[in-house]
Amino acid sequence: MFNNFFGNMATFFSSGESIVFFVCALLAIGGAIFMISFNRVVHMVLALALTFISLAGLYVLLSAEFVAFVQVLIYAGAISILMIFGIMMTKHHQGDEEEPRRPVHNVLLAIGVLGLFGVIFYAIQYSEFKSGEFQAAADNTMEIGKLLLNQYAIPFEIMSVLLTIAFIGAIVVAKREED
Image (tube, rainbow, N blue to C red; front, side, top):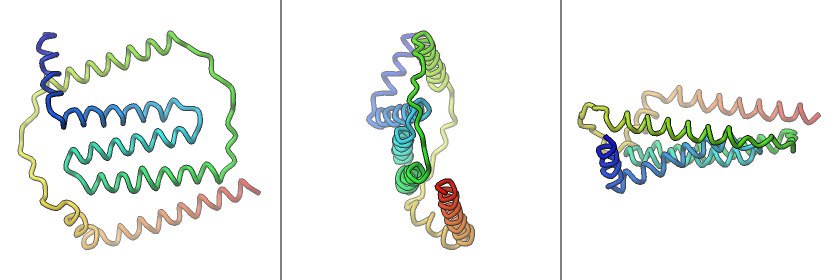
């Protein structure tokens, strides 16, 4: 059983695409874990940006270049900058208390994470997926542009107005806290 398992792992890592997928997946998971474990808000935002960029790499592997570009442009760029502006505009007092170290807790957590990873990896390796051919569009960006500017033009514009209203509301709330 273990020979078959490690043989499948060797097959999985034989192509460059699999290695890039594994690296992007580890960076996305690591960024998410760092995001919830850091104490400083700016560090949390940077970890979140790492997760967003790694997800963009996964989108590139799925041949969704437009979605990857939007992921980097909007999420990794705009949302991260907006969060940093939000931190700068509000009064944010960081507590300097250190939590007590719990090495047993951390070891058990690491064992649990590795066990969960092993179970999920084993389940994916021995699952049978239907092998249907995926027909990607020749130009994803053009098709998305046609849909946005023809069929979904009004919802797209309504969303931009709602985002502008939310940004103005955030500024009003920040000004109230200042006074």
